[in-house]
Length: 224
Image (cartoon, rainbow, N blue to C red; front, side, top):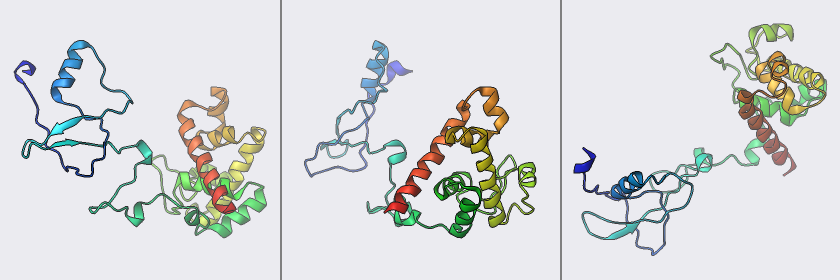
């Protein structure tokens, strides 16, 4: 059936009259077919500028691909960034609703507040009522058996949960000689898994990187 397709008209969503050259990853259907037949891979990271003719007006237009993975910021219908969708600012990260508990837990277990907040952010986004598919509960996402061993009688009580999570990560830090990445992997997957793997399991790396990224953001916010 492909042999009978001669062209594919692409109707632009918007035309531009400001004279700017805009980049795009779009290309014509014929170009894709030719590349496929020639064995050329069209999926690369290079910027491609392609001009199109509006099928209705005939006007030449170009497009800009503004997608940038996680850096993309959504805009509202008039093109301005919605307040609720803006990148988290330093000011918004200076305080959380459980700051007093993070401070208390930090002092008791000698773990930085920024690390505790980062774990809570990654685990539940500070939701005391959060329950994971595996059954982890509360702000620091403690498993039932873990919560019990840490002396947490009510995992949905934010204060108890944060104190329990702080005690847990402090134990992991001691167990892995202060290696934060290993301790975070153990917090996420269990000490046994880390030891069996002989390091950070591959499935934990995204979690570890996320927590450390949040930690750095909290430290930066506190210094501003």
